[in-house]
Length: 123
Image (cartoon, rainbow, N blue to C red; front, side, top):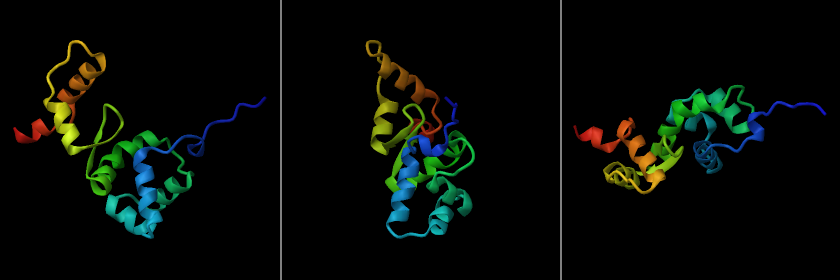
């Protein structure tokens, strides 16, 4: 039995890539979408076809937040790894520290150091 290395085609696409696919499926050109999100057109083309040669973590860190902001009016939550509404982000940031729910405590801690924390924008 041969060990085959996984490719980007074998892995589920991140939410932000699906948003970009939806924009292209609406009839917009890859070049227009790439320009809008600030990504080189050849990179976006390879990403959408599943032939992007690098791991998706670096490209996700660079473009995911912008894609969520443009196409969903959402903010990428680094803690949960997906887009959330600005209202949900604010609710999470304003929530009191939970001592009884471990997940809420992890979210609370993540919000305190998050670059997107809306409370940091006020100060």
